[in-house]
Length: 267
Image (cartoon, rainbow, N blue to C red; front, top):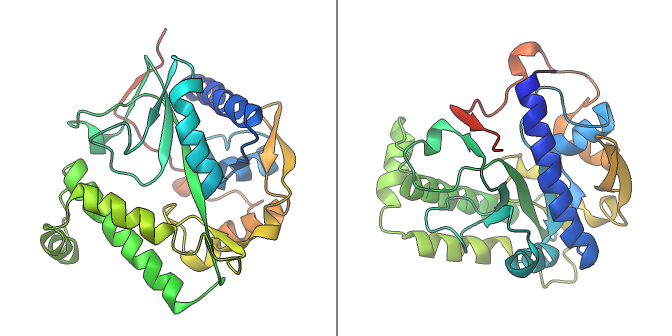
């Protein structure tokens, strides 16, 4: 493995363990997710070329975790989200390691924390695995996320459709975008008939990522880099839904990462 990538992975595991310590102390449910879950199953650790680490939490646990970070997160780390960072542009949180840098080109000229991170995604409830309403819900979330990207990190779209969307959304403020996003994603959370989990902000097609809660809970333990972490109980079903034949390695040209322009691993 590349020595620099190995350094990055060590710090990300350190961040993950800090998150897990808070979760375990406060009975907060989390799951290894996306490429991290795939890595646990296929490699018992990181996908060799991967440079991020993802976990998810049911919405109530996610919100409790964010609140607890204020008093329980070690000073070596920071909670980076819309509540703590005026230039934040994402509807999910990151835990970053202080004294490190992992700078992507998109935020090169943005005054925002750039430390090495672990992504923490919220899982919201929906009633159906597939429905026109949920597809429209996802569309609105995507539009609002685009507006945040434009306003918070000065993203300039290059397509006609993107430029038109930027113009039409110019009157919707950052605060309004976050407020509407929050309401949209939570729409079904208090409905007892909402038996599916979905993360609206992970970039995966809505039909693929809407998963019955019984596939997540009760969670199981999976090994990741020599440590056991919480994972969905039917991880085979979830990985197949999202990735298809997930045990087959992708072609080399598809083995991509975030391609940072600056990395500092700290002292």
